[in-house]
Length: 152
Image (cartoon, rainbow, N blue to C red; front, side):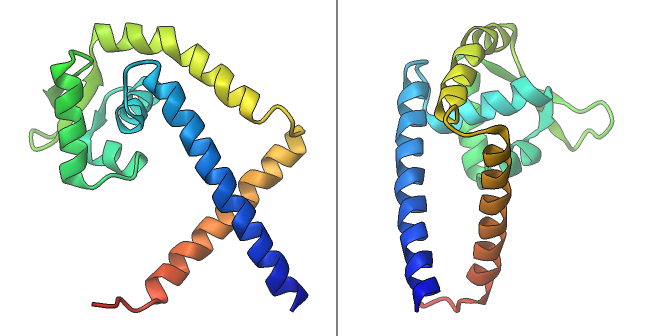
């Protein structure tokens, strides 16, 4: 029973920490005039460069229609643009506009500093171990999710 109690305690800590981190990141992103999803899309493009819409959706864990909506909103703000792939005309790529690039260059260092502060109490080894442990739990959650029957 001890392991079950400890697992429940750790799950409670994980969920509370996740909520706190999510709230902190939302607040940080709102200071830049963006919601977390918009920021995540810009961050992918800033880090990886021009990307197909489908890859952006996978990177930020969005459904195809939601990804298209977010890109539409960012396009209206003048931060991204769509271009046809030169390799495959069926593929639409999204890239940062000059304005989007300038915005990310100005705010990304501040955002990175907030993330650095979030983990500053952990040693390099603790940070690595946390990442590996959370990855293991996340993969297990995906496996378990697939085994639970839908109640419909």
